[in-house]
Length: 159
Image (cartoon, rainbow, N blue to C red; front, side):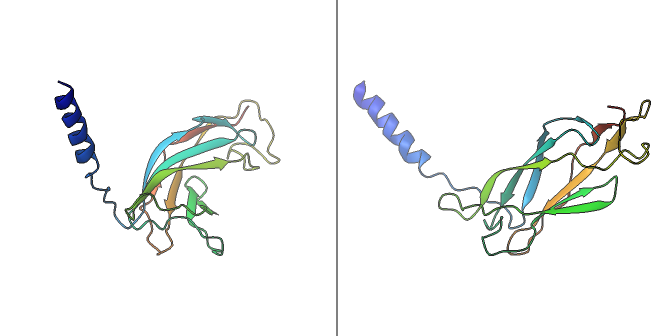
């Protein structure tokens, strides 16, 4: 019985070592995971966006001498794009593809709800508004992901 068990274990180890590495397209692919909050108070709350990525040629992230931006967050509501820099991501294992997660922290800003007059202070009775974002990344070879539209976030204007 011990010999049979030993052979089964050895066979399982052998078969598991033959698993192919995943095949990802050269263009980065993004998938939304979560927000830390689905409702924020204007100019007060920080929010964290978590997205998953894959990149088939494994060259996502900037090396130390790069000066370019490689993540672009667009506030669809405002029509403004904000560039960010993803740090270097080392290759994983023997394949060329990489995968992982990116957390992007959105800090409180002075951008007000459209219904609130400047300066951006609490405005009793102001209606909540919806903010929509889209995110894209570009790898070092210039391959750009398809835009990933994120679920809307509610912004409280009367906090």
